[in-house]
Image (cartoon, rainbow, N blue to C red; front, side, top):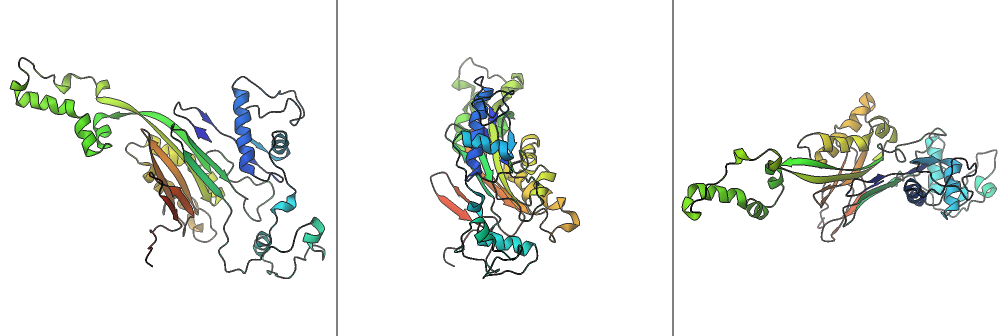
Length: 354
């Protein structure tokens, strides 16, 4: 999902994929081709029954799934692989653990007495999981802001282990697992000044200070009477500024879906007066926030409501990295202004001397 300084927004999503090696590249291809279709250069026709044929295209659709999405991907050169490519012993054992089966290190038998690796062409040198090591859930999100003020977000996941077939999670759902939005808002002169540095306030506020000096020391400007601010219109006392946000979520997907977590966070920042993006993140993804409250009395028992959100906020060309979460930790990394690279898992800063 991307939004530009002119508030031009585009989004795509792909789900129920079984052969696409890099689903995020398929989403990117859908974004590019869909944008071309909407720009008056259609590469498709609603009458074309074969999406992989010469007329096949995204037709400007935002979310495609299954075989149709992958046929389009093949046409556009997105790499496809056999299902066995995605197999690892670690994930297989997590699946078995989810089914309350015993972890096995010497065999993967259990389906009619056959070894599914041999039957489906899997390889057997993948290291196993000892049941003690942390097992990541597989969701990866990325938010990017460029020098032109365009802000983008992309999220990809392997899905929920042992879910019902056909279940769609928050990751490919616009407004739940990801969101980007920009708008122009009117702010008062005072709000604009408070957002500046002390030196900028002095320079930008010279006209106001000059009026005070004129009133106190009329000899500075013989024959001139300063104009009172009361004569200025309300329009002249305000200014316009552009804001933008983009964010990606990770956690219990069904909770994100129930509260449209990403869009709700953006809406709080946009429509709640004097609410910072950090505060909006906290209200949704922080401890005691909307995600946690959505679990009700199931909180802390089933994993429901757990998760976090990362994002970037933009105000008048200045970007800010924001994040919050309600669980034990959240892997995150970002690059600050000046090029400093940061990596964190928990809330507290690392002690390099520890």
